[in-house]
Amino acid sequence: MDGLEELAGLIGRHVADEGIHPCAIPRLALIRSRQRTEPVHVVYQPSLCVVAQGAKQVMLGERVLRYAPGQFLVVSVDLPIVGQVIQAEPDRPYLALQLHLDPAMLAALLLELGPGPSPAPDPGPGLLLSTLDANLLGALVRLLRLLDQPVDIPVLAPLIEREILYRLLRGEQTAMLRQIAVVESRLQQVNRAISWIKRNFTAPFSIEAVAREARMSPSALHQHFKAVTAMSPLQYQKQLRLQEARRLLLAQARDAADVGHEVGYDSPSQFSREYRRLFGAPPTRDITRLRDTTLAFEA
Image (cartoon, rainbow, N blue to C red; front, top):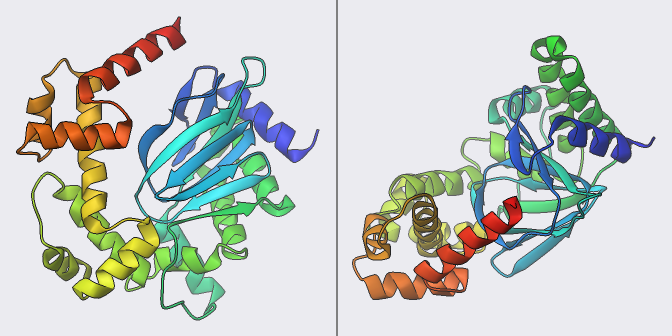
């Protein structure tokens, strides 16, 4: 059995149900889907995402990335992404893992590794697609094997996670990962702006206020924010508002106008118009379709 087959077997054995499932190993989640999915709007946190079986497509702005077994995605900041499982069958489901990145562990490794390449003036996109090598794949397999020996997890999981981050830092993702751990890097300045917007997304804001939080000029913030997220700060805020509105409408039987007001829209017509532009249908029709799809899937 090769490494990818073993990785898929370990994920399949430890997660029988559809969806994303945290497990006994800190920061690790296992993912399973037995069929292709509709595009799903989610906010990815800084993480390593690896497909063991099947294939997935993610969209960030105009960028479309497709990744399959043998490839992995690294996300450096919280990003509103459209994700879609594009290859899965009941007898050969989509299987993947997501490991959230620990900035403190990255910073400790960087101290040991010493100076790296000079940082680029522009932080670049907040997600990158790469190919798994044998060393990284082997470390991931050993991490998941711990699920069969849970008594070993507290001691061995941090060591293997550290190796995984080390392998990433030695690969083509190193420049982006170094910026995650360096407090005053351009990426971290953008991340401060993102964190502020996430805390205040229901209220109007000025670009000057966000720039002060990021400790950048407004023009520099706009340039670097768009380089990382493929959108402006105001577009990022809009994505958060609409995703939260969709979550509230799906979870609760509430009036769309009330939900729109709760997430920051004073105009119901503007809320409905922007919701339809993002999700392809006005709120009531979209939520009805989502619920019908969920019921059909569960059946």
